[in-house]
Length: 224
Image (cartoon, rainbow, N blue to C red; front, side, top):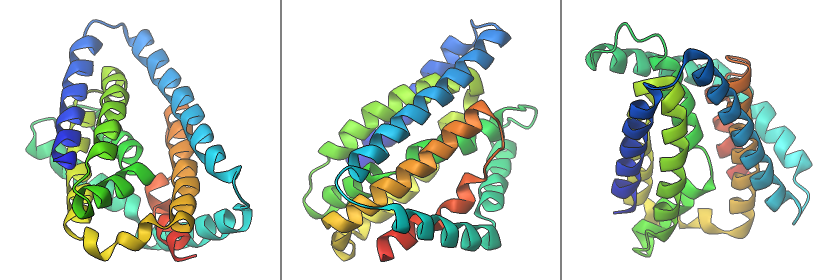
């Protein structure tokens, strides 16, 4: 139920933000997007620092991001995500919507990256405890509501990758319980929040960092 509620919260937040966004001036929408970026930056910093204060993660962070960037850029994850977004754009009848891709990619990366998604899905699958995903649902509702007010309908479709990712982890949770270990969780939290920080940078200065190409860093962090 955790993932189902999360998907519903993203859709509801996206639709609500779109209704609000219609009544905002273009300059207001642009300002709102910059403010979204600032908020995401501070959320990411607070999340990363909470874990980093309990240990030394400098070498792990550098190694994870460096290797992750090389692997991710070679695979071109950002390109795959953008092509999937382009396919959704055509199939959903939003071919003329210039902000669809930016809304889909930005929101997907914001709500998919982070320890809450992975840990919450495992807890839901192994212990039948969806509380973490319920908390994430509330956060995602607010985030998507604000993002969709300036970026539009593309934000709503971020519910699809969230459902696929968290649903798959829940189904496979019995094989992924090791991710709940303190060391793995701390590494995942630090690297995940740094990637979310990069998403915030892109909201303020568009297309500065190909965040999706850094996603393999999460796997490297878990391995370390």
